[in-house]
Image 1 (tube, rainbow, N blue to C red):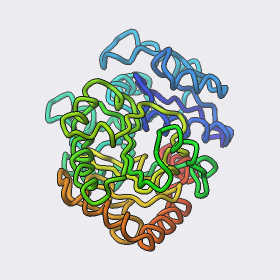
Image 2: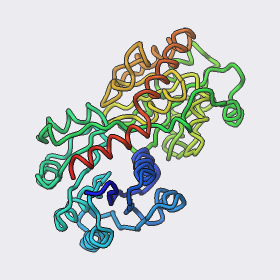
Image 3: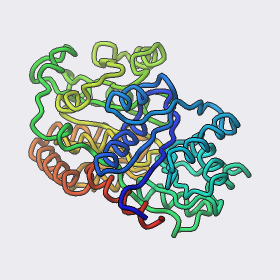
Image 4: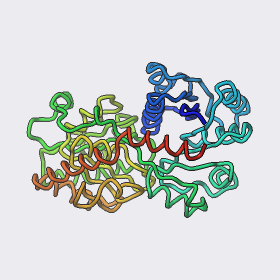
Length: 367
């Protein structure tokens, strides 16, 4: 095998999420190391546009169906014409299509699992995750690996590779003043934020809002911001109105200046009730040097080490979440220490460079 590998990444990308961001970082990192990288993804997506803008070899692929014969044939053609050494899929539909194409062409196949939900208990999922034709599964945390092993995947076929942050973009010392001004936050008012797309109830936006109502009883001038796809939609506005928090909660929607948004916060909250593999919002908040409160689900405890890099609370418990937020707002020394130690932890362990290097090493081991 030559030092230069040919790698095909496959992913459905209906919108911009952490999975898309991490896939693009991996593709760019591998390419910078001299490998030939092709990205097959949803045509017209944000991911396709950003990857093409960065000079990546992007191929549009219909990934809406897990068993689309045209897409499988197209992937097989890419594997043959680009002399692909290894196929790496990143989401559920891409997993199915990539597995069938890799099986048909005899190529090694990897899939990345980013959520800590167990796969569905049906024949299709058993074949996808437990088939010997899946060479390796990359879990983004030990929590995700534990779920897969409990499901029946052999432990020696699951490799933990943590997602990474770009230290040039997510770093301490960023100025969030302009963001606070834009959001209408008065100087000196505590600002607590949650960064997460609003697609599923398991993300815990309701828990965050219930905790916000409790926090305002102690800090009447506190303000709260929700950032991410659909956080400015009608359903979220209704949830805020139900709790009579219209004057206290800013619904910011999708934004591209996430590092600056994080830097504007006094406390960053991650409150899912289940499913979190390794929260990008937590990792990025730590990297920027903001104190974090997170629910103890999935891989969160691998990022938030209680009392060391942040505070952990039980899921679906607004009182506990509010108590942790208040603790950080009231104890500036604690908040500062956690923020400093959290930033150091990410800088030393959770960079994009380390993620790319570890993935490259896994590819070479397989080949």
